[in-house]
Image (cartoon, rainbow, N blue to C red; front, top):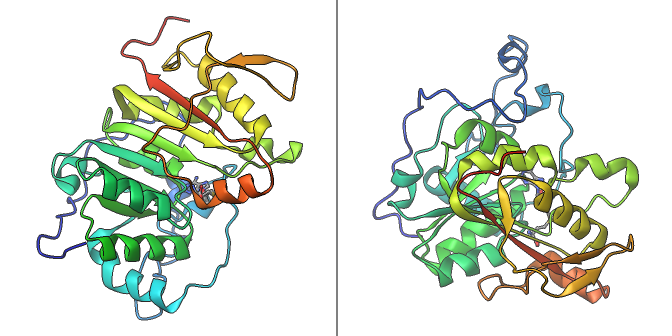
Length: 298
Ligand SMILES: C[S@@+](CC[C@H](N)C(=O)[O-])C[C@H]1O[C@@H](n2cnc3c(N)ncnc32)[C@H](O)[C@@H]1O
């Protein structure tokens, strides 16, 4: 990452966010006088915001577990030095000007980049595509910033916060050329299934932010989640499977035969979580769906 031409973050936008999908809490709940001062990661006021959207005021089931993870010296140094230029706090208060941030390149959103190794590699191998990478995990944010800096990348932005708020409040209609969700937390216990990210409401939130023809690419090593992804994506009117039917048929853990899982595309490197799953003997499924131009009438 070169600081020669730092991107200009846009001034707060006045465009009204599309609230037609996942319901936003009443403004009063988010701007209550009781809301504490926003604080930064480091005591000297640098780094990402600790809770950029004040999101714990929202009564909503989350797809992530807040973790207290140690930030290494290298990650801290990267966060302090690079956050002001390449970081984005997901504060839910402005619509991002992706054209200005990424110099007019098509932009894909990657939700849950973990430690960011795969993200950095994809960005290095495809410099003509911008990657807006969002996660709540501070060590990973520092790691990805450091990797991007060492590789001299100018097509990655690191967003700190909940992807739901980013999608709901901060992205304009059809702003995205793609959406990547690689190895999202599988939430294996039945009582936690409601925390899984890939659900009908999530797809209805994401669809209007995707340009027609944009690819939604998911991958998981947790077979029951792959089945859920396949079922909700296939049922959603805004998406169609890019893999021609009948394709290879896969019998799921529930005995249902599903067609149309995709082979891993060459542009997706093996991720850290994928490696851990493969070490345990898990099978990886990729799902490649496309946003349709005109959703079929239901
Ligand atoms: C199981 S890890 C996978 C990381 C990486 N994609 C990989 O394959 O190695 C899932 C990641 O998604 C992040 N995550 C889950 N829900 C999120 C959300 N709503 N917004 C932002 N990040 C989220 C978690 O913090 C975690 O880092």
